[in-house]
Amino acid sequence: ARQAYDIGMKGINKGHAIGELAKYLGILDKQIMTTGNYRNDAEMLRAGLGVTVTPDLVQGDYFIAPQEGVLGGEVLADFLVKYFSSKK
Image (cartoon, rainbow, N blue to C red; front, top):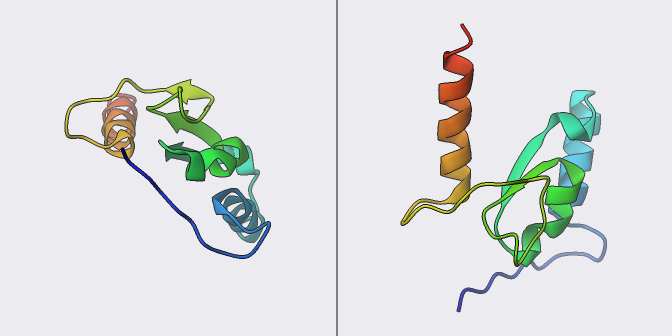
């Protein structure tokens, strides 16, 4: 079984970091796309436009079907590069 742990101050998590990054960049947090696959990513997926490969563990706005030996973030990045390259 896979496990993930984030150790930090109460109220400080990946979602909080996305919010702070958005403020620093002067953009809305929903203009940031995030990808995560485990419970420690839950707040981050709610802070940005969330994409998950494990909707049974963590909810996102979108779902990417897992691929053998490839992380969800890699699948998302590959899709986005191909998608936006075809729009030129």
